Length: 350
Ligand SMILES: NC(=O)c1ccc[n+]([C@@H]2O[C@H](COP(=O)([O-])OP(=O)(O)OC[C@H]3O[C@@H](n4cnc5c(N)ncnc54)[C@H](O)[C@@H]3O)[C@@H](O)[C@H]2O)c1
Image 1 (tube, rainbow, N blue to C red):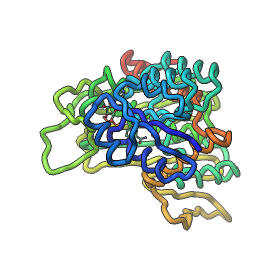
Image 2 (image 1 turned 90 degrees about the vertical axis):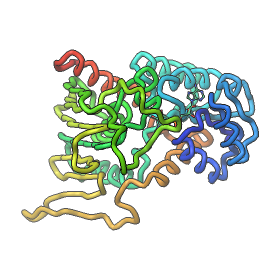
Image 3 (image 1 turned 60 degrees about the vertical axis):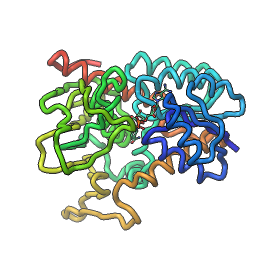
Image 4 (image 1 turned 180 degrees about the horizontal axis):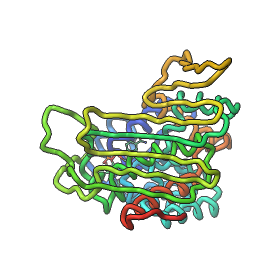
């Protein structure tokens, strides 16, 4: 039995709490949030009795084996390090931290304590990504030399801490780009990044005046402060010659929201967003293949449940962690380099 505490019980925490509740190997024992009313409300809703407003107090509880960290980005590294040092296993939401230095400090704490730390790269756990990974592992795509990912919201700045760079570390790049870059890099076989060229734009603000369209909001939505970029694009080059092109936005004068993730190899190609498709060639003919599966797209509930169950198995049964801390550090290096390149107005060598 794994006794779990959840730190930060805002919007996304529900997608951790529900799967923990449904996992027979887990006992959900504690919640923590700096917002007392919220932690009380969630405690009542999920029948969790040990409620804290200070994560350090929660970590003193020796009954707790593992924690999910679902707080603002600016506290991920501090809480993760304190939890590891208190002997807890950690599932930390993406991004691992706000800076590379913080990410490396978390890595040092994992190495020192030997505890499990899983980074919340939830897309790796989606059924479509897992199925595609099986094809890739069997060399069906051959050498993947190009990937292209877009996550463009025309209206989707979540406000509150998301748009306050001191709490988030940045805008759509650190929030959405982290998923896009990670899933491509992971499926490409985690090649070593060597250079990055990026651009960030602050042209439209958060467009909070727009009416009649709803979008994802932070638990404490507040549109008044917005000092993050609204669009980022980047080209990342890897040591093996492969390249990745990505663009992400919180607001954009686009006709509609758009999400696409495409991978191109010398034997085949694939898409996992908006839905899984595999492309190949046989007998001088191009084949577009549609795998016959329940869900070709990204299913939030399935992916989070699979992520949580994976974490539980890593903690209890020593299963191999598919989203280890070093991947969180490497993705942080790429994100950081994009911001650095945009600021400098030139390509950054890594
Ligand atoms: N994997 C995904 O697809 C996904 C989706 C959304 C959010 N997230 C990540 O989850 C995290 C939380 O996002 P959210 O949308 O739930 O935000 P949110 O604002 O809705 O909730 C965050 C909660 O954390 C609490 N909090 C902040 N600092 C704290 C601290 N030091 N100690 C205790 N509680 C603290 C806040 O009071 C709030 O209740 C972020 O890191 C975000 O990037 C991931």
